[in-house]
Image (tube, one colour):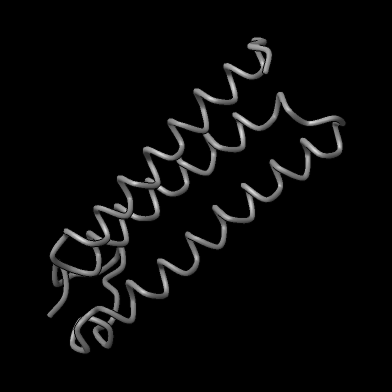
Amino acid sequence: MTFSFANVFTIAFTTFGLAFFIAGTVGLLRFPDVHSRLHALTKADNLGLGLMVLGLLPQTDSVWTAVKLLLVWALAILAAGTTSQLIARAALPRELRDAPESGPHDTQGGRA
């Protein structure tokens, strides 16, 4: 195995990505409530996947393969944001879910 710049770059960035995946998993297991668990998991996993993709880019044989990797990362970010929003809304207490939103023209100063 030769140690070219591309190989060292790939090893470094995939290792950093793995560290973020582990940090997100620890946050999922250790944090007390759903919202803080979601925050830790989505932030760490999105950054971990980004570092993994960045680390794999020098190993691709064509530009189209690199574009596919970047597309997978973008779709994973969109999916994580959407699903975490749905889970967070479902985890809210019923009183907060059913309360009307206060708008900029609300004269009461917030929720009643």
